[in-house]
Structures are given as C-alpha cells and as structure tokens.
Amino acid sequence: MAVQTPFYHYDIELLENTLQTLTAAIPSSNFKVHYAIKANAEPRILQTIRKYGLGADCVSGNEITRALECGYAPSEIVLAGVGKSDAELNTAISNGIHSINCESIEELEVINEIAEQNNRVAHISFRINPNVDAKTHHKITTGLSENKFGIPISEVSRAIAEIRKMNALKLTGVHFHIGSQILSMDPFIKLCTQVNTLLDEMEAEGVELEHINVGGGLGIDYLNPDGNPIPDFEKYFAVFHEHLQVRPGQTVHFELGRSVVAQCGSLISKVLYVKKGATKNFAIIDAGMTELIRPALYDSHHEMENITADAAMGMDTYSVVGPICESSDVFGQLEMPITKRGDIIKIKSAGAYGQVLSSNYNLRDSAIAYYSDEMTLNACIGKEEQVAIS
Ligand code: LLP
Image 1 (cartoon, rainbow, N blue to C red):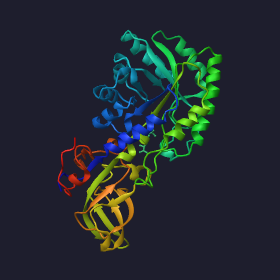
Image 2: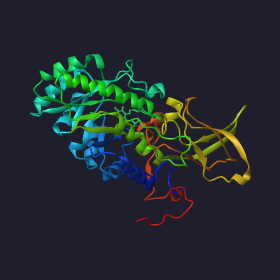
Image 3: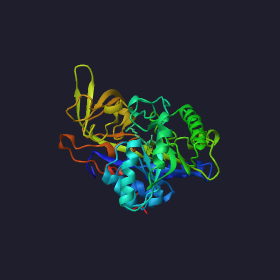
C-alpha cells in the first residue's frame, strides 16, 4: 500500500468534465452558478471549480475565508444560513461579498447594525420558504413550512416594510432552496410557479429585484456511478429558462453543490477482517461513519467495489461495515468476489457531503485527499508506480 487508508480520491478529470458540461448547459448569460461549498471545501476542488467561472455559496464565516483564499472574488460570494453569528456577518460585510441571504425579520436588525458599524450597505436577499415539497429524503428537505428555513411567504410584506426602515441594508434579491438530491424536475417547476407569483406581489409593493436565487438541489445517480455520472444540467437549467418569469436586467442564481462534486470522489478503504457472523459475512473495513456518514445518517446508498479481488475466485455476499462502535456504522450489502484481509474497497459517489462531514469520533485520524492528476488511484494503492503527470 503506497498511502494510508482510508483516504479520499478525487477524479479531477471527471470534475473538469462535469464543469465543462455544466457551463455548456447554461442557456442564458443572466444565469450565474454559485458552487455550494458545504458539499466539499477542499482547496483543490474549489480552485478547479473557480477556473470555470462559478461563484461560491457559503454558509459560514470560515467558508467565506476559504473561498477568498481559493481566489473567489468577494463579488462572487454569497452567504446563507439560518443562524449566522455576528462574527460571520462581520466577515461577510467587511469583505463586501455579493449578498447575504436573510432568513428572518429578526436577523435584518442584526445585519443592519453590523453593516452600520462597517460603514457599508449590505445587499440582502430574502430567503423565502416557498412551501414546495422536494419529494426527497425528509432529512434533506428544506422548503416546507414545517422546516426551520426562510421567511414564510405570509411574512414577506412585513419583511419589506422592515427593511425599508433600515439605513444600511438594500434589498436586492430573493432566495429559495427546496432540498437536495432531487431527481424529478417537477418540484423545480412548482418552485418556479411560486417564485413567479411572489415576484408579481413584490413588484406590486414597489420592490425591484436584481437577482433571483433558486438554490441548489439537483441530484446525481448514486445507483450507476460508472455509467454516465454527470447529471443532466441541460434539463435542469431548461426548467428555469422556460418557467421562471425573469424581468429584464435580472440575474438568476443557482447554488449547486452535490451535482458538481459527488461523482468525482471515492472513499478508499482496506478490508481489515472478513468475519463469519451467525447469519451473514462481514467485511470489516478501515473506513467508517467517521469518514462517510451518509449511509448511517440518511440510509443513503453508495455503490461499492472490491478493486483488488479477482472475480474468478467466485462471489459471495458481504455486509460491509466500518470499525466504529455504532450499529449504524454500515455501508451496505455487497455481492463481490471472495474477499480477504487487505483487499481494497472503493466506495463511490462520495465527493459531496463526504469528507466535509467527517468527524474524529473515537479519536480517529482524518482521512486525507489525493487527486487523480497528482496520484492515480492505482498508484495510491500500490498497484502501479506513480508516473509523473503533467
Ligand atoms: N443552497 C442551500 C441553501 C442549501 O442548504 C444547500 C444544501 C445547497 C444550496 C446545495 O444543495 P445541493 O445542490 O448540494 O443539493 N448532507 C446531505 C445534504 C444536505 C444539503 C444541505 N443543503 C447529504 O449528504 O445528502
């Protein structure tokens, strides 16, 4: 083994192909995509994404700092979050970022105060809860009335009245985000309908907006990572192009996270033990929920492959589990070639909400990242010599 397992391996070529496909699919010059940094905040990933002209959607002061360090201009950075601290607002305002998505009327007052202290006028988007069902996993649904996010549509008039009283705030946009891992276009079409109605109402109240931010949420195909792993961005953007009634001069913002990075990352792990349980075989690997919590947290499915075993040896079914002292530390059932200690398991589609969600529970070491253009996966696992890659 050339490097220590478990580790993340990112396919930079696939990331670049994804970004090329994404940017080519943008149907209008007034569409601007901000990459949702929360999905993966590795500097290499952020720098690659920036090369393709995407902005940055941040949810903390540290994410803003990371974006700035990775070369994103303040004018390309937006800040969201249901509970922004004063320090985070200060980072946003003192750096003069593009806009802050405000989630409550209560928050307006705090942002106004901090903007005044900075002698700046902060540009505000109202994050509005559109009450649209994204029909995704309930733990990643955000746009329903019962969710904690955003200003309810019924409160928008009051929010407009409040912001008009504030000297250091300017209302420049509206923001929506209905959830994540959305594969059907229907919820996005419904969102457009809601947004159109709201824009009419806001216009009737004399509000002119510069931008409409429709959030992120486009899903990926977790079941077929080796087929065509790049999501259908064309179909996704076309929904908004067709259904959103954009006024002249307005821009439409998107905050895509998962669909940009999920497919390009894998978690690579070594089999520590193969154990015969009373009812099943366990392949106990050295990655656990500390490196990839999605299966434990959302019952999410990640395709896996034993990349070192030989299918000619025969097949068997294994429950692939991690080493953590939690019964939910399970990656799933897998039929794979007869597996032995030392084999390498690749857990696929782990580029989004993988490494960023890892923890040091059980005082574990952090998994580090390798990039395909610096070290191939085969070189990482000692299958081939690393050749210099330009
Ligand atoms: N904008 C806002 C306001 C968000 O809350 C999110 C994700 C995004 C954009 C990006 O959404 P995406 O394009 O990645 O779907 N940890 C979960 C997903 C949580 C998503 C949180 N918000 C998972 O592993 O499935």
